[in-house]
Length: 135
Image 1 (cartoon, rainbow, N blue to C red):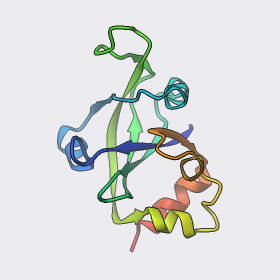
Image 2 (image 1 turned 90 degrees about the vertical axis):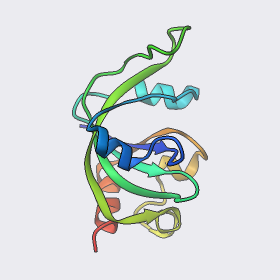
Image 3 (image 1 turned 45 degrees about the horizontal axis):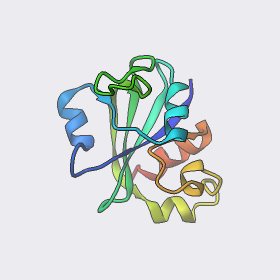
Image 4 (image 1 turned 30 degrees about the vertical axis):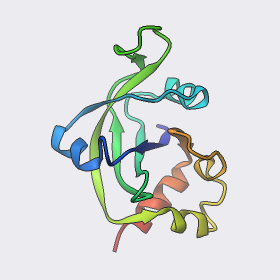
């Protein structure tokens, strides 16, 4: 099982929407490197959901429930999507500043590659962030 960080724009689709829907197609990923990572997803992988501005925080966890498949909205047939379902909402969102200031998280790809919609997270990083989100 691999772990990932997925960016969500809370103005268009946020973790509350995912919880309400119970399952969603994770689409809108257009960047080349993010698409490369998305192609590496496997059913059962775990993901951290990060809200972009104004929140700028990890707010919950999700499970990947399908292998990558062609985005039905992409006429070129090049972009991929996956389906995800919510797991848990973090009791305390973990802000970007906490990620940057944690010695355990300094090597995260998300912190090194600005504005990437999908990035890998080690299991240790995933667990550390979930711990930060507990009271």
